[in-house]
Image 1 (cartoon, rainbow, N blue to C red):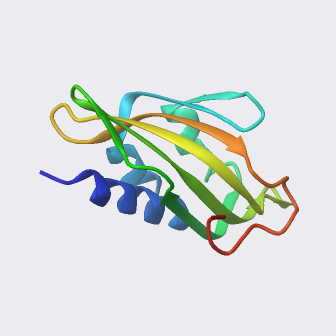
Image 2: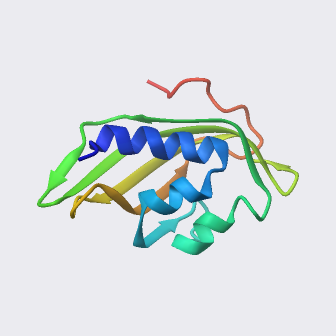
Length: 130
């Protein structure tokens, strides 16, 4: 069975590389994300972002607190830093992100909640802030 840390690393790598096939395997069918401006994206919409013009030149996720395990679920709060563009507009920023995983039968991401730490267009920190 794949560990949660392995799933987190695979997710970040797939995001960086625009690998919707791998993301499709990592995301639970009921996945939903809350974006930094309050919009919602279901699993298919999340995967469609790359086709719609999302390109990363840098993407990293670093957990900021201990992972919380509740029953067969896990919750990871961390900092996502990214550089890239979406339909030609800069998306360089840092975010506070909460990721929810279900472990039945293998760790799959079921939700993400993303909040701005730095505004779009401002220089994203090269490492998560202390």
